[in-house]
Amino acid sequence: MGGINPAGRTSGHQAFRRTVLDALPADQQRQTLEGLAALMRLAEHSENGWQDSTGQPLNDPALTLREQVLNHTLIRRNEDPRFLAPGLPANRPASMVLAEPLRFTLRRRQLPEHLPAHWQVTDIDAREVEVTVPAGTLDVLLPDAHEPKVRAAAQLPSGFDPASLYRSVHHPRGLSMAVFGASDCLGASGLSWEDLRQQLNPDHIAVYAGNSIGQLDDQGWGGLLKSLVSGQRATSKQMPLGYGQMPADFLNAYVLGSVGSTGAALGACASFLYNLRLGIDDIRSGRRRVVMVGTADAPITPEIIEGFRAMGALADDASLKALDALELLTDADYQRACRPFARNCGFTMAEASQFVLLMDDALALELGADILGAVPDVFVNADGFKRSISAPGIGNYITLGKAVALVKDMLGDKALKERTFLHAHGTSTPKNRVTESHVLDEIARANGISDWPIVAIKAFIGHSQGSAAGDQLASALGSFAHGLLPGIPTLDAVADDVYADRLRLSTTPQAFKADAAFINAKGFGGNNATGVVLSPEVTERLLTKRHGSAAIDAWKTRRETVRANAAAYLAQADKGHFAPRYQFGEAVLEGPELEIHADRIHIPGYAQAVSLTADNPFGQLNEEAPE
Image 1 (cartoon, one colour):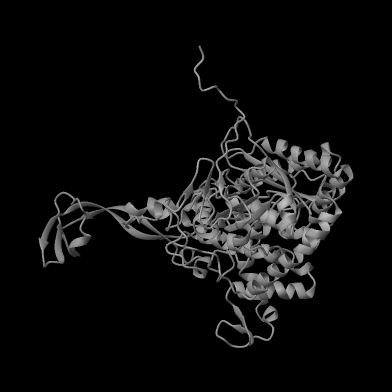
Image 2: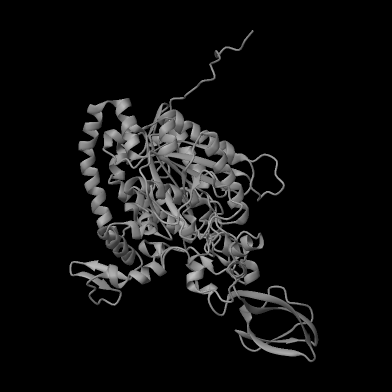
């Protein structure tokens, strides 16, 4: 796994550790804080030890920079300059009444292409003209600045800019995050991608990655859509780079060089699980052996935040003040903006990029892959008829019910009741706290679960839209590795209308030995999904049952080298040394280089050919026409 979110880097469980920091042993706390300080460019490690950003020695960066790291990760006051004084850049339409003619000079190239009626233009020289506007009414746009109505946001750790780590040129933020996330995933795997793809038919690799909104910042569709009214020129990159499936396209073209299956399934807040299901189905069917799955969402822009605010979905400043009867909001108040299952007023917008590498079990054992867990299935169901397209519905009763039934069948009733936990979607909206808790409580009742541990990490990292379930999956893998469940620190008290008779909601991290976790997501439009993830210990027991002890022993021997490679990558990453994979213009193939036969195509750079043999379940007709 790899990626980045407001808690930090996904690999090495850095982001997970940030959410359970105070419950970790002292050495792991120190490692986490040092790694985050390096990620945020507050400290740098060299052969001379740690230095601060000015090059001065740092004897104990974890202690010296602790408060700065804690205050500039997770949910906090939006640090984007556009959200600071004087406010969000805007224009206000106005009708000016001119009592007398208005004269001004202008560069010739700044003249409107179609001059308004009655304007008089006189040449001054080759570059400048004088414009005379007659008395009367003149419609104009006046530059303005709007005070942000929403200041809470879950941004990536301050100082971290994925675009600065590779040769990016006008890349939307989400795509830069995708390049970093996929590279982080490959580095943390301990496997050589070049060696891996030589062992596979090129068609046995797939990439399913996207996001729920597309790239709506200025480098993508956001800049394109406002280019005419803002007086800016559209660029040749904005249109193609705005598509929602572009994270997959970027990985194929610049990171992996894959020619296998590709695509993206968009399902609002459930998008990560939709793509995960595509990968699982491909591997279970035998069509693919390796699949990279992920999402990358960067929706913290003035326009997107205003759109969600207009829906009443966000925790805006006015609502937060009313919730706590405050006159002013402090930095500490913004850090508590997201309150799943408590008295709350809306979710907090976030950004994140999450990627996982899936393999079939035989290949994972053969390679000595370090198995972090297993995902047997993802269940997706719609809501049926709805009053409002954005309102909750019934689909998640079905998805969670199916997921629970699968775990009961695989691991048994006792394991389900005593050794599973659930990652709630937990957006922190008043409607969601009621409807989602009813789903969880009812499924618990139906299965005899009396004290089901519930995790709601949006309290820490906000809602990253299509990447939200990726954040949850990465956190679940962290819980397996550390035996800890993150608490809900903003849960002062469970709201009166929450169904929690059978749910365990804790404000602090809890020690917990889990066999499986459920990843729940629900999105606008009726996009519901629940994924099942099994712990590495349970996965190993299942693999032993299928492949035998000798195969598992051989896998563990091969795994030592892979783990050593991964440890070397993580050691460099913890020091802030990153080198994302980005291969622009390298090994480009356009067709003439291929060796084409009727039954196969050889591609330079791949040891194995792509098989063209048809899988035909439809039967055959004789060549002769029937009489």
